[in-house]
Image (tube, rainbow, N blue to C red; front, side, top):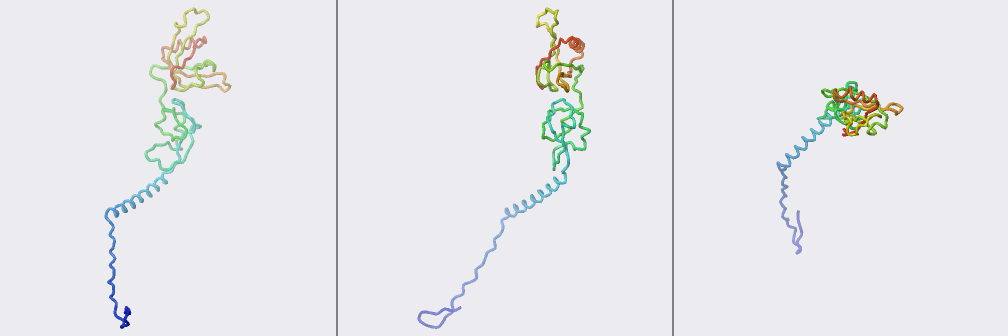
Length: 219
C-alpha cells in the first residue's frame, strides 16, 4: 500500500499494521460442569416421562361419598386412567370384585384413588357385642341420617301404668352399624351393636314400643 505526500514527492510505502491476535475464550470449569449437569437432568426427565407413560393404567377412584363402616358397592367406584403413580398403591380396576362388599375403614372422598388400606373385612361388632335391628318410624330416628359409628343411647320409656319418675328410665349404650330407609320412606331400620347382656331387655322394650333413641356422638 502507498500514500502521496503533500509536497508532491513520490509515493512512499506506508507502515503495515501488525495482524490482530484474537484470543480464544476459554470456558470456565464451573460453566462446563453446569452444562453437563443440565444435559444429564434432561436425559433423566425424558426417561421419567417415558416410564410414566408406560405405567399408565386403569385404577379405581371414589365416585361418591362412603361413610366409615359402610359396605362399598360398585356404584361407589369408577375406573380412571392414571399415568405414573409412583409411591401410591391404587387398586387396579380389574380387582373391582375383590373390593365390592368390603367396609370403608375411613371416610372415602369422591375424586380420590382407592387403596386397599382404606378398606376392611373386620366386623364392626366388638368383643362381647351382638347386632340388633330396630324398625323405627322416621320421627323416632334422632337424626335425618344415621351413619356407621354413630354413638346411640337407648332409653326406656314408661308405659301407661308406670308411675316412676323419668330419672328411673333404663339406658343402654349402642353403636350404629348401618341404617336403611324403606322404599316408601315410612320406616327406618337401624342396625345396632350393643352389649350381649343388654340385648334381651332392648328386645322386650322394642316389642312394647317403649324404646327411644338419643344420638350422643356423631361418627
